[in-house]
Length: 313
Ligand code: RIB
Image (tube, rainbow, N blue to C red; front, top):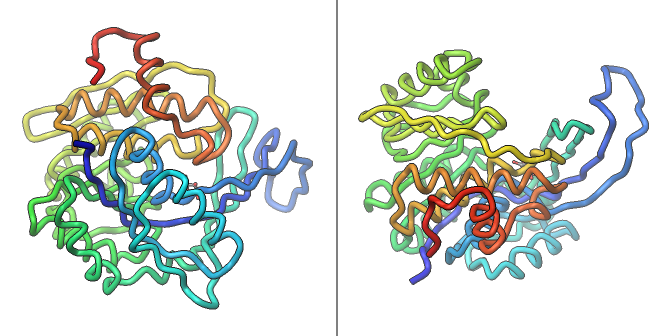
C-alpha cells in the first residue's frame, strides 16, 4: 500500500532570475538568465511526496489565468489528486519572484494571489480526505485560519500533523500543541522560540523551547550544517550531505515531503529524517523548485552511492 498524504498549501509560479550576486538597494544589475518554474511551498511538498512514492491529495487554490492552468497541468502530471484544487475567478495565481546567486543562495518575494483565498470551508469540504490520510502537511503561505482548521481536523482524528511554518510568523501554543512534527529552519526556529539560532547549542535551546510550547517533535534543518531532531526523549544531530550547490530553492520543501513519506511508511523519525536529508541534498544540485525535486529511484541510488546503512524498500 502506498502511503496516503494530504497537503494543504500554496501554488506559485516562480519567476527566477539567476544573478551573480544580490543587487544592492537602488542598484540595477545584469542577471545571467530567467526561468518560469512551477513552485509554491505547498505544491513543492506535494510533488516531493508524490515523486517519493505517496498517494497525495492537495488542497489548494489557483487563479483563472495561464499560470494557474500551467500549475494544474504540472500537478496532474505528477498524479496528485486535485479534487480539492479550487480555481478562483478574477484572481491571479500566486507568484514568487526569486533571485538565485552564483553561490546558490536565494531571496524570494511572494504575491499570494489565489493562495490568500484558500478558506476553512474548503478544508471542511475535504475533511474526509484529511481524516483518512496517514499524514497531513501544512505550511504558512495560505491563511492561518485555514491551516488551523486543517490541523484541528487531523489532530482530532489522530492523523500525524507536520507543520512547516514558512514564511515565519507568530503562532499560538494551542496550535503548536496539535503539531506532531514541526519542521523549521534557523529563521523560523528563532521567530517561534525567541532564541537566535547560530550554532548547535542555540539550535538545541530553540528546539527545547518549541517543545515546551507544545510541538511533539522539532526538526530544525540548517542547510549545509545538518539537521537537529529534538523530542522529549532527547536530541539527535544528522550531518548534512555534502553536494555541489546550484540552488537551494525547495530543499526545505523536499525535506518536508520526503520526511512525510518516511513517517507515513512507518519509518522511525531518524530514518525518515536521514532519507529526507538525502532527497533535499539532491534538490540543491539543480536549479528551481519542482524542476529539482528528485524521484524515488534517484534518492535510492544517491543513498547507495554515499552510504549503505539504510534499507531500501
Ligand atoms: O520554498 C520554495 C518556494 O517558496 C518557492 O517555490 C516559492 O514559490 C516560494 O513559495
